[in-house]
Image: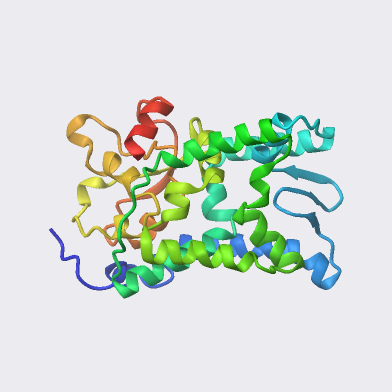
Amino acid sequence: MAATSGRVGAEAIRRKGWLRANKWLLLRRTSQLGLLALFLAGPWFGAWIVKGTLASSLTLDLLPLSDPYILLQGLLAGHLPHVTALIGAGIVLAFYLLVGGRVYCSWVCPVNLVTDAAAWLRRRLGLRGAGSSFSRTFRYWLLGTTLVLAALAGTIVWELVNPVTILHRGLLFGMGTGWLLILGIFLFDLLITRHGWCGHLCPVGAFYSLLAVVTPVRVSATDRSRCNDCMDCFQVCPEPQVITPALKGEAKGIGPMIRDINCTNCGRCVDVCSEQVFGFTLGRDNPTPTIHQKMETSS
């Protein structure tokens, strides 16, 4: 077994170079910051390439995009959406069904910048936190609760406290006291539970994970026989429980492709692996477990 001391990813940097050992991280940051720049360009500089927010937007006055999770809550609340919103939600659904629902979390969501910063600082400081009593399935209960509340209250209750909405609108129009919620998420992830918000609580991520059942774009431990048990992939993965079946399941006849619906396709396992065990792939090399089975393995 390889030594686990030292900074996570250091061996990958030594063998592959810094750029290749951070390739997918850099691409994700480019995506997240680039999308924010497109939204901010209008209010800040008068260049209205994209109008709106992540909830609903119009690109170049032509392409509508709508968050299907918010649209669903609106429907349950009794609000009939405009046909443009339905088209926008359909486009978004089609996209995430193709590339994986939790791609939203790692490549789009601005709160991911906050939680990743907390995870990075947590590793650097060697903090373990007090642990958490929240199962990773708890976010699905919260997801259900937001839908029930929308139906009972006749309004999209979740949007009043949704940190994604608060952060995104705050960057556009001013945060106010919204910074307290974002700071709370950062401290929760830093001091209490590793990847606590995204991995255990966020109903937005729970919703988008349900779109990952049929996606062909997957991370695969194609060369898992080369694994030296350095554990770096587990250290950087926001959903480390998804790695084990693909990496260690050969004896049980489990294929190398990560099929868990909670894989975010962030690519960090690909980056930090000095043995180049992981890579992105297309296809369905593993039997597809049911959503119930996948949720059980995520708990």
